[in-house]
Image (cartoon, rainbow, N blue to C red):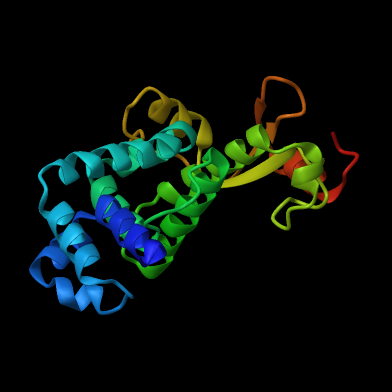
Length: 223
């Protein structure tokens, strides 16, 4: 029995309803890519057609959505009705992955950044809200030593401190999203810097003026 191939197809059937539909419509096209015997093909075909597979897919997607809801809740709310299609594309490209919170957060964040850069997703707020939540997740889950070794850490700041750039006033923007409200109309635009200090048990957020932002980014001893 080609156990690895059998398990791979079974996992993909659970993760993707589209893959399952393709397998049902043209099983040989999928099976020819794997070393499977006749009995394994019959079993996989029967499982693909079983009504219970839809429940398995729903449970799998709920499990995959949980880490994103816990680490990127404001981004998910901001995406609104667009989230479903984005998740379908993301899960199709990443059918079986490590679901640990920081890893899944980083992976989905990279996917959304790619969607923004490609023009498939257009939104004036998603990029900066996503960067904020990704930074908060990293500061929450990684130690100072782990953060210091990461290439994306701002080198002139303490490891547990980030200064994030916004093109919209972050205070009313984040406050509205945290209350499950859309971004306020006529948000002030410009260069805003929000410091996130996670060196204590409770993270501290502070909007910086340009002088303070330049000082923080220019010297490790500014804090």
